[in-house]
Length: 353
Image (cartoon, rainbow, N blue to C red):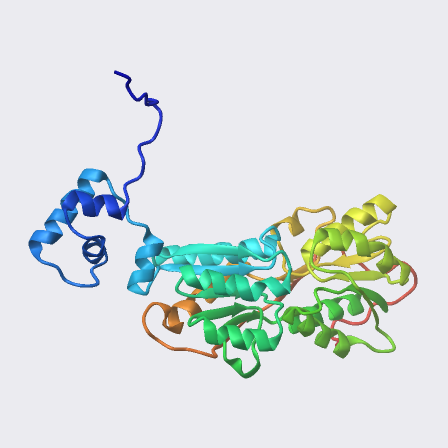
């Protein structure tokens, strides 16, 4: 008689709820009721199901159970680019805080495609109790629509019109104003700014600071760029073509690309041109020269976003819809900025941009 051969290393098939029901001689619905506790069953039936679960080594799917109970103990996080150190740190802050409350974190990376954010958030909301949106680029109308579809929605670095979505934001306007003031005090009168994504709320905040700082004695030349180091590398030549003595990058990540391109061109920072970033990622202090930037506590942003999520009703039933928390931004001066070459006299420290 032929025998069926089995590989010693092969895993036995994973038991299903159907297997448990067959083993306990009950219906799959009864197994579900026992495991989720949604409806009471007799003590005898419950014991038969528990015994069958133990014999088969059945492990319930936590996501499926969560959907049946109406709570998954998971939070979704949508980020524009998980490879960007800024968003990686924000994500870490959310994840660490969520773990303290026994919540899992589900992540979607939209690849800086604003059109993908809405669908990504909706999909995550099917498997999580709510969603944290990091720096969403979507139009206001889409954000308002999403807030109605996702019960527990929190934004990082985006304030919706009317404040219908809880949010934690950085004071980007104050941070950019600090950079402008610093460069002006050093004596720079002609600077270039490498613009971030046009739909980014944080970019609009930066632009308000730039408009306030601009004047006859402080010209700001806008250079289209983006949010990645590749974008910074590509835009560096255009920044130099403006004749600026200082270049302000949208972020440290962008500044990394600028610095690499300047090195290829033989442009010395800060001897030939000063360079600033924004966000103070870990690499900023390890570069040579060390980067002047604006410090943002990114993991703290993530933790605060979690706290807003928890207080939005996702955990304790509280409702703080519309609450906005603002995090400070601190100018950090390092080696990448200096007075421009020439006879320009720096302004006194008390001067305002």
